[in-house]
Length: 333
Image (cartoon, rainbow, N blue to C red; front, side, top):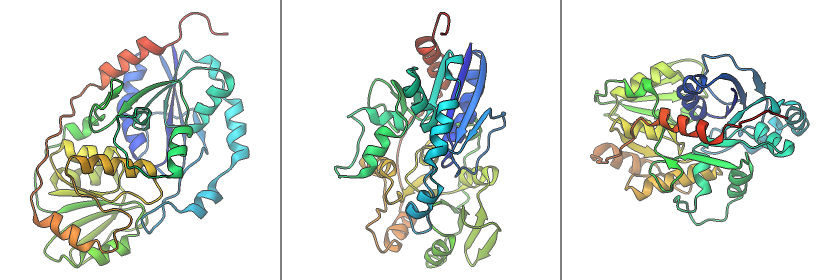
């Protein structure tokens, strides 16, 4: 069996989940990997057959998407060219993790593929989401269209939705509390964060920044460039995680029983939905309209947080069910 696994390369969550899923897919046959996008800091250990430009949202430094840089990074001619040249009929199974080039290529070539992603969960009307008119809703539904859907979310909101894929390296961590707080807010400049956190001098902050190429310290704030191993160690030993409205990062913190505070990116509808879902569980959120973050952060630090999430390790079974249900049988045309 030949399998194509197409992965979104914007942000670290898709790549992190793929590192867990790739070895499972390889058990079923010959696996080719496709990655498109330009914003991930985490890398795959397996060879990538198709490295495409795709379409990435560029993180800004003020809490949202940098629309200008995103527009400059867009290359529709290359997108269409890449879409046309993919030899998709070679594959018995095409698995898509919110990757647009292969999704639209499948649609163009009349080939079925299955989405295996957090974004797939939003095909269910049962998933919590704010009642807002947002162009992001259109992007979420049309960005990487597929016929079949297997989704992941913080809860089993529907029959095709599973709890998060927690990486083995996270499951194997020894979780303890050394008192510091871990921070990953990729859409915010570290200088802004330092200015905020130095106002809480009795707390140690370990900030992982996409915008700093060197490590430095200012008073009680330690800033590091993004590094997977160092981040995992910091997360395992922290009291709490302050992060954006992504999916994998908050899920890993909840799995490790850490306190959680999220600040979803402005102009990013999926993150708004994730934060809204976490709010339903009683977890604190800093919305884009909040001007003064200090009181919320101070309250989060000073008060305990109790939550109970059950994220069992079901990934192998999910992959097995997917292959049996969606792999094509018979000769390929």
